[in-house]
Amino acid sequence: MKFKISEQIATIKPYEAGKPLKEVQREYQISNVIKLASNENPIGFSPKVYDAVAKNMKDMNRYPESSNYLLCNKLAQKFHVVPGNIVIGNGSDDIIALLAHGFLNPGDEALMPSPSFLMYEISVKTAKGIPVMVPLSDFSTNLKGLAEKISSKTRLIFITNPFNPTGSTITYDEFDEFANKVPEDVIIIVDEAYIEFVRNDAVYNSLKNPLQDPRIVTLRTFSKAYGLAGFRVGYGIMNSEIAQILNRIRQPFNVNTLAQAAAFAALDDEQFLNKSIQAIHDGLDFLSAELGRIGLCCLSTQSNFLMIDLKTDATQVFKEMLKLGVIVRSMKSYGFNTFLRVNTGTPEENITFIQAIKKVLKK
Image (cartoon, rainbow, N blue to C red; front, side, top):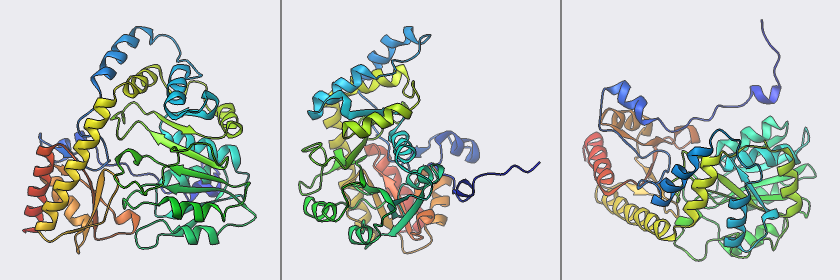
């Protein structure tokens, strides 16, 4: 039997996650495998998270608190907003989907850079909206191009800052110039998954003065700097009217009890957060210097990863590095055929990566 499916769904390209450690171990019969492909925190998460998770294990026969009360209040205090401005999600991509379903009617348009995080496009299509793709300009978000694509059908605009996968950024002046061209009834979604790693004060940070513009929805995650990727917790800070819509349609128990407890505890450990950020910066500096010594060019980045131009087929290099037990990310699916993306690891993992890429490229 052949079932009929939505034409929009039929055009969706499945999201390809970074290759899992255990899969590489099985496939290549290697025990010592390192993963530098998914922009994860190499040093783990705060010890306070262990304690919080253990404390809450006894309550796992009960449903989670639907309102995410403690976590919402903690975030509200941190960013000087009220809990009604916050939506908690099963990862920030959960909130991306809620925005698409909450504000797109069939045929409505959502603008986004191309290439970018695939969940923008997937969420828009599942909501029966039309994704309007705007090519990058010199590896950066083409704000001028996005503004030129705004039409009477535009409802959402996705901005990623810092940008994944290139690591480029948008300054305050650039964002303000762009925002002035956006109609009052269009929501600007600013995805700041990597904002904690920014070293340049000129880079736009939407939560420095939150809620000044009711059109702006800020997305953030605990997966990167806080090291909670496996717990799946993200959050959005937005105008209360937008938040009410998202909370109306989200699943009532979308964030599990342990994830809520882990995120709450992670916010209490600024020392660990700062340690993580410093480790990432040190790793980036080491990798950039070592790659430069062997003649490889990296794009400037304000994230926790590097885009490396190999000047050759990056997918083949990616496959050869897998055989050595090093998982990185080929950027072929993004249209960057000669680029690898690598996130920083521990000092030992960074050294292993450099040794492996030298061996593969015979540098």
